[in-house]
Length: 137
Image (cartoon, rainbow, N blue to C red; front, side):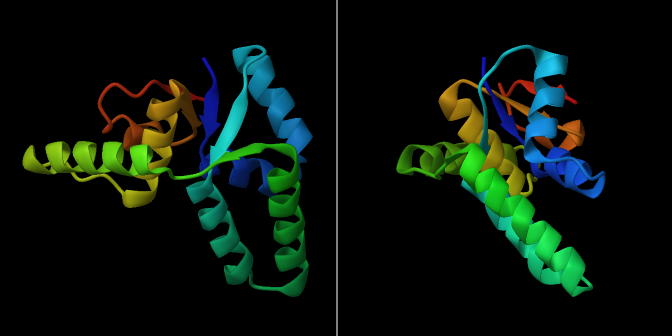
């Protein structure tokens, strides 16, 4: 089973001074040789962080990190099938009174569509998505 990495793992690694390669090595050490990818939504979240940086040094470091991610990892788009799956799950969960953050919903349904798990530091949010395998790193 592959993994879709949530932004929480990437942000923690970047803040800790890790390169993308080091983060991937840590993921593989914890979960074995498995394909790891990203949702395009994660790139949105990380790019948002670039423009919220308080200083130019932080902005440039974050920009370089996102560029490295885009170069070295598979970034899965939000396809029509993923959008429909997200809409179905969001509707079903809303009917039950469960609210899922939109970004987490799209990241999680990307993983579901691919037959992958989500690797995250924030298990609680992703556990709201039925049938999604969630692993904490």
